[in-house]
Amino acid sequence: MNPVTVGTSEAKAKFASLLARVARGGEVIITRHDRPVTRLTSVPPAARHSVVAALAGLAAIRAHARPCPDSQKDLIVAGRRT
Image (cartoon, rainbow, N blue to C red; front, side, top):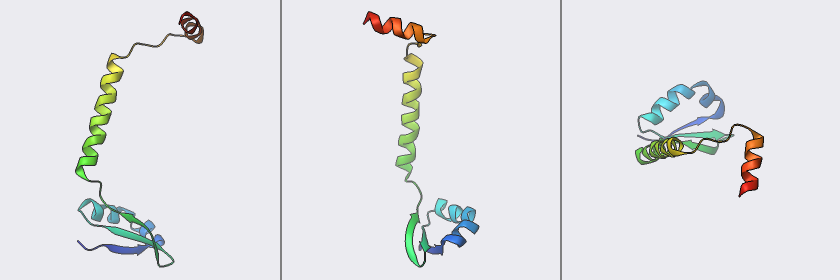
């Protein structure tokens, strides 16, 4: 699919359809005063997968983490013991 070039006002007006085009594998170049300022492309599947894996890892860490003390006083007392 060839890249589509649109101005900023057109991109704002047609943003949903431009995103749909990008989701299908297209590319959109947005210009301001006929100069390219950004390019919309889809995120590679590997990058999407790594985000999901990272979130799953964080959830696993959270499941095994110790609960925090209930109050600031408990934190101060715990800090004095170490």
